[in-house]
Length: 535
Ligand code: GLN
Figure 1 (cartoon, rainbow, N blue to C red):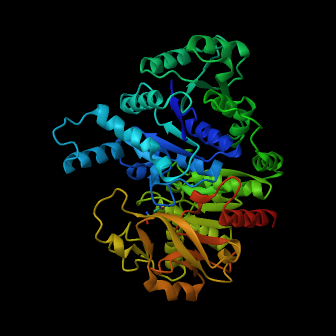
Figure 2 (cartoon, rainbow, N blue to C red):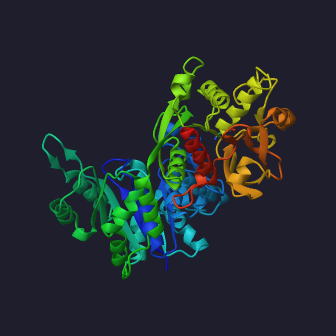
Figure 3 (cartoon, rainbow, N blue to C red):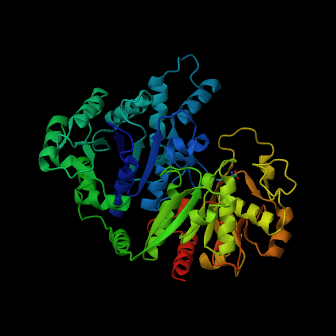
């Protein structure tokens, strides 16, 4: 029997529903259960691939090529379990399949309505994973906050499912906020009470409440909330600010979030979850002696835009016993005159992924600075492309070298549109997405980094690619093409072997780094940064 846990949020957004979902998944997994975590987002875009990162942060990509919300990155990093396209659903996807069915004639004679057709489709999607895999628990996070107009069909679907499945098979966790009013010196529970009332008004009684707070809540506050919201005191859990998101599972376990969920579904919790390796990671992280400063050269100046990269750096840093301080450096503000000031003191530089013209000259100048000063540098996707362009301009002497994404008329199109992309006109979901094989050149730095394997799989999200017509010239002048797709011959990795660590990947290694399995390239990069910092 598969059990369903729904996670909703109230009062305000950004309370960390994704982290709570990932943490609960981690705890149930550590108890030996087979789990999956999925995200249902109420917006109308079919997927977040067409969204600017300023809207919802980084766009994450699953191995099977679905562009998803960044919370899926948390799910994978916490549990190490890969998600698929079924783990990410939006209103757009729901409506588009219902409309397609209507056109096919599946509902002939009937008026197609939000209830029951849209809600039925939501219910079908919630249960879809469990029809394909043996799962004990499906955790479904509902994006947005209750009260949003667009969330209504999702909440109605949850209400129906809970009724149909019964309390031993379906459970609701509601995450709310308990603000501290400094002037009054008090923690306020009213927003939580109101939010729960709103949920009850929709026919959903939360079984567990997680209260997000910046201050530790006393038992009196928890009792008060329990009393007003028809929830057991032991099912009122607090989620206070912690130094790291990776401490959340431990905090949740201490307060018995997983045990209470099991009990409410009629399962005797038994022994505590085995968090041994996870605790080892936290211990190592706490005791990390040195601090490494890594510059992230990119154009999106918000915390979540490069989430998977900062997390991958943190995983690899902990592995090498150091804390990584990732400093955002706005590439739009970098020019020849200030590049030294901006990048001085960095132990390493990441040239970030991205799209379009804005900020790319700063990335190219940064690549040049790293190359000529032999600072460890990691170019990812657009970052790799900028390393290639910089090399073509300054080493091969092609001053107009460019990507056709930025300059379609350039005669030195060292980054070109992929052949298969030339006929593509639609923007959504049409990039080269998801996992592809890459053969590594034996003896190269990356081959060593990956543990001397000949072939790897990595996830992609791009339209443009290294132009193989220039291969010989790059190789001849010292930039080696050390990873290629075995079928298409597309260049996936470049490196300059004569430098300390200068690697660009067309793929996104950051999507597959997890807490317990940091990514080999990030580990090798951090190692080089430590050595550089000590030199
Ligand atoms: N804009 C580049 C391309 O489409 C790089 C994309 C990226 O960095 N994800 O190829």
